[in-house]
Amino acid sequence: MVVAAAALVLVGCADGGKAASSAGPGSLAGAPVESFTVARLGGGSAGVTDFHGKVLLVNLWASWCPPCRQEMPDLERFSRKAAKDGVEVLGVNEGESAQTAAAFAKTAGVTFPILLDQQQRYGAAYGALGLPTTVFVRRDGTVSEAVDGPLTYDQMQAKAKRAEGSK
Image 1 (cartoon, one colour):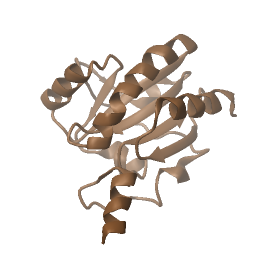
Image 2 (cartoon, rainbow, N blue to C red; image 1 turned 60 degrees about the horizontal axis):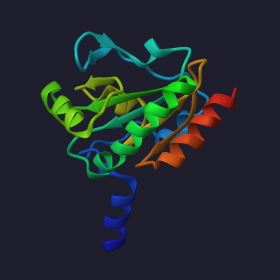
Image 3 (spheres, helix red, strand yellow; image 1 turned 90 degrees about the horizontal axis):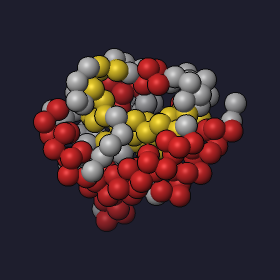
Image 4 (cartoon, rainbow, N blue to C red; image 1 turned 180 degrees about the horizontal axis):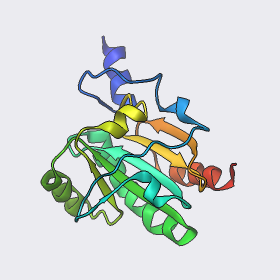
């Protein structure tokens, strides 16, 4: 029982009991990235493919998720540094209201774009087994790699470099 609980903490926040649509996000490598047009925090709408031509770090998160909250400062730091190298960070809030996502983003000092996926289509399409889930997308719109669970700043850098250099 303790081992099972520890495994859940290591993976990240559970998805509320919903079954994942695949064996996890790792199976996405090499595939075209899925995109859905959803509301964008601050107004308008967008989808992941609106950022085509850039290396992307797409991070699925929610404010109620402790690993997401812990990862956010590294995501923001990475976003500020990586933008100079042509890498874009895109947050995708899973299932929360615009007000909840905005309040958390403000408190956390988030400056990168946030999409509001209230129907959690990105989580289902990316095979998220929990939150956070991060997908690295090459400039050509294909997935370089995807990971369930929180990443450190150094891991973000290494995975983005691989996405920049991979075909």
